[in-house]
Length: 301
Figure 1: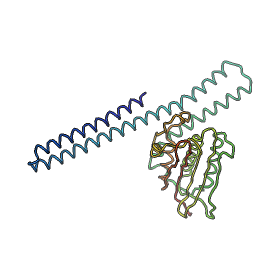
Figure 2 (figure 1 turned 30 degrees about the horizontal axis):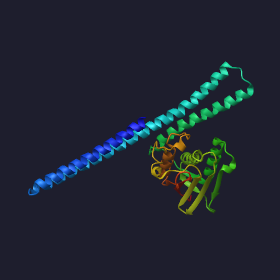
Figure 3 (figure 1 turned 60 degrees about the vertical axis):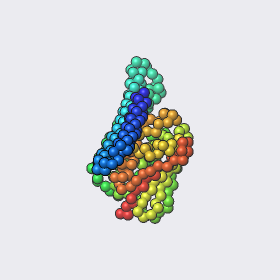
Figure 4 (figure 1 turned 180 degrees about the vertical axis):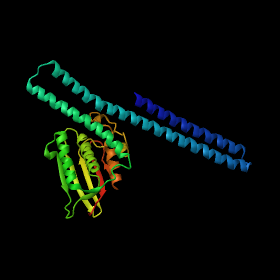
């Protein structure tokens, strides 16, 4: 309801801005017609008019940007609140059941497993928010070392399989043959976070059938390119430019079941840029999958 209200506010201010510009143009044209002989006044009038128009355009653009940012912030708060409340409520329910009823041992073990899973979910949500804070800090992660990127990617794949309870064949790995080492000069923790977030996103948006292709490519001596392709829901063209923004989540009915905070790809982009690299996404449209590519400078040390 709040999002609809904000969109209505944005439309209103856009309409107001356009109306004011049109009114200013009409007044200025009328003034020019009536005072065309007064050249000096005409010159200063045009400059003053241009400044007014520029001011109204800048003011309207900043207003719309702040409204959108506020809308994304509210969506983030709602998502984080849900991600925190749901596992807490689940843990409480299981604990109350264990306290009030004498359950068989097998059912107790199942409850313990579910509570541990909910605890992991809580921990991951908190860590994701903390990572986003570190990603925005330019001073964080300055200590660098030579990281074996090939090994790091494989370990992240194993961790993703374990977290999502996937069979080995759900994530396929391939790489371009290379005689040298695939090393990146940077923070092992940050790079691990970035790779895992890309894999986690690909799995979550794959739907019921997870088939993720992970490819490590070395186009030249200076670059290492990691491509992660899924065959899931895809990304609409209108959302393609915004998916790496903080708090942004693709708003589509088919993605309502996917939980998250809207920080994953923002963190990936921030870490890639800190390491002198870049990240981008490609998708042919909804239902046609997505490929996220991260390019990093190669260390020859």
